Length: 329
Image (cartoon, rainbow, N blue to C red; front, side, top):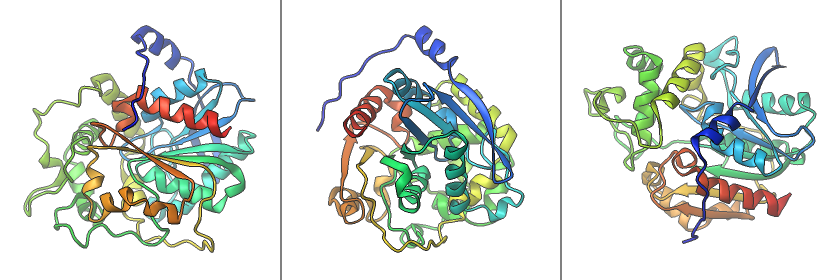
């Protein structure tokens, strides 16, 4: 196992660096897309793509680290997430929409090529972007979910009815479940569930939100201030688009002839990530079957890492990212 050195940043330095992150709104496909940015405009670009229930803020530690190392970090909120505009018909949102938005975002920011870093379903966005717009990508880093073949995804066949994805795919079920709580509480519960090493599965007469007891503390690496930031951003967007992409878009198809990502790639996985418990997932990752599709990928496991490995162990993840960027610049 790779031993990863790390640096401890004081809270004062961290807050000072956070203050340097700039926020802009870019007109893309008729929507205002919010993007957080730090680093020189002429520096090599790194595009950070969030998962669920995350937004740009989930990359705060990585954005600061890559900017201090001489890169330009950009972290958008997808359409319908955080501070970005919702699509006119959220129930028709798609992965293709997000990929198209990202292309125009890079154009608007005068970025010809970028490293792309995706977490959770952001990994699928990152790889789709690399397949469709290969000439715009220097390299790909993903976390939490490996490259999966670009075919309709189904994790539900071999798991109980109470599997969280199966529940959230049913129109109205998650809306009713989430609607009993404020947005901050929904994010809190999902963070607690997804930071565990077991797949979130509800009992037959239980909702997903009820798996978490109200007295359960937040993970130690996720503060009340962090939760408040997430809660305020989801006050703007709600969860309508977030339920459509990713959970209700897993059957989406793509017209991609050559399903091979040739650029350098890195996959970072927490050893305690619950996704490893998905049927066949651990074998797929550890047997290097990904290399059929991403021949230049390297896989690194982070000891004790959860699904939120970049927030849980930012120093280790930053070290891995910076080594990759510097090697492939």
